[in-house]
Each structure stands twice: as C-alpha cells, then as structure tokens.
Length: 186
Ligand SMILES: Cc1cn([C@H]2C[C@H](O)[C@@H](COP(=O)(O)OP(=O)(O)O[C@H]3O[C@@H](C)C(=O)[C@@H](O)[C@H]3O)O2)c(=O)[nH]c1=O
Image: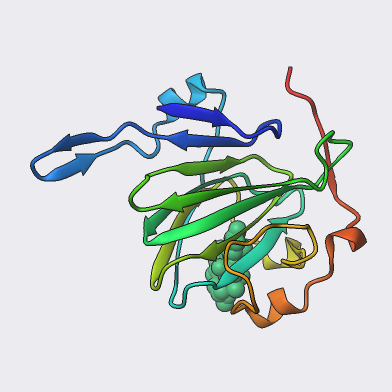
C-alpha cells in the first residue's frame, strides 16, 4: 500500500498494491487490519456506486452534518475522474483549502476523507463510475452542499458542467457556518 500525504491533515491518497498475472490483477481495496495500521480506523456502513454519462459532469460538493457526518473511501470503478475534498473543519489551519487527485480504473488510487470535508468530483471520460464506502448512513435531512465554483477549485474541464438541480442552487463556501470543529491528530 502506498500512502501519500496531501498537505491537509487526515486526508490521504492510498494506492493499494496490485498483483498482476496473465489474467489481469488482484488488489485489496479495503482491509480493516491493514488500514487500521495506517491510522484509518473506519467502520463502514454503506457502499455507494454512481455512473455519470457525460465527461465533465460534476457531483458535489457534499457533506452530512454531525452526528450523521460521513468519512469516505473513494475510488474509480470505470473511466477517470478528478476527485476533490474541501476542508470545512472550523479552526483547521487548512480551512477552505481544496485538494484534488485523479482517480481512475487504471491507476487504482483511492482518496480517504475523514469527517469534516466536503466531497465532489468531475468525470473525465464518458460512462465514468465512482465507488465509495461511507461510515454513516445516507441522511438527506443532514445533507450540506457547497457550490462547486465557490472554493477556487481548478476543475480540469472548463465550461458549464452538467450538475443536478440541487448542486446548481447550492450556496457558496463563504456562506457556510461549518458544523465541524478541527481536532488535531494526537
Ligand atoms: C447519496 C445518496 C443518494 N440517494 C438517492 C437520492 C436521490 O434520489 C438519488 C441521487 O442522489 P444525489 O443527487 O444526492 O447523488 P450524488 O449527487 O451522486 O450524491 C453523492 O455525491 C458525492 C459527491 C458524495 O460525496 C456522496 O456522499 C453523495 O452526496 O439517490 C440514496 O438513496 N442514497 C444515498 O446515499
């Protein structure tokens, strides 16, 4: 497992080892013991999978408020996407900063987002699929959305993206009264 820091505390890029052979490859994308050794002690309760047809589609930036806050382990099942996390933990030295990484079926990278981050992504190929594990159940009444173009994110595909109606109507980051408090790692 390769672990890369992102410059934002708690947020990590993980690249599981791939065992290649004549058939293709094998990789462990979640192993509670291995990840606990890396400081990721998650209990996942829901797995999500979505397909976006057109390249350039943006979903996000989404979070759920405590006590329904979700940590997420994200990867790309098919195609290629630009995955983004925005630090929304009040008191964090990196509050409001974003981090983006290309996740693809080919590179096998994953992004680990602890609680306290808004999450979104832009697809880079047709029929791109994202797959992610969550530590809390979907709770629409606890959903928060930040407008995709309000955090200074350098989205790879310029122009007007395809968005859901609720994402298009979301308020900017500047209006957010974040429910998350930064806790430094011990
Ligand atoms: C997120 C979610 C949606 N749904 C339903 C509600 C709705 O009818 C339909 C589509 O929902 P959405 O438009 O919210 O889907 P989407 O925009 O893909 O929402 C997701 O975006 C990414 C960026 C995340 O990080 C996720 O946590 C989630 O918020 O699916 C569930 O049943 N369970 C879920 O966990």
